[in-house]
Image (tube, rainbow, N blue to C red):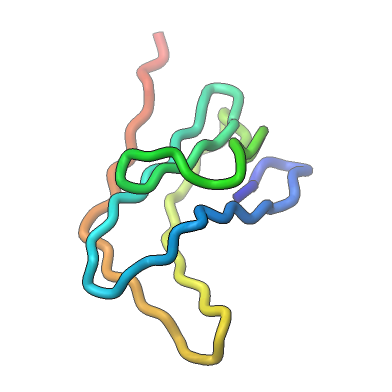
Length: 89
């Protein structure tokens, strides 16, 4: 995770392996400073909050990707993507 200008991408290991045919809910929260925190099924996961992961004033496009560590390809079925932001006063 990390798309802020001058910030290298940092992997975040949730420590949780997906299970076939099992639904999970993934959530990423980005605060007003651009720090990111990750959740699986409502529980915070990962090795840490990623500091300054994004530039908070730049619009983001959500991307979902599955990466394989072996030769076999992976697929992911997405039911929905929900994006929300606080209103600016």
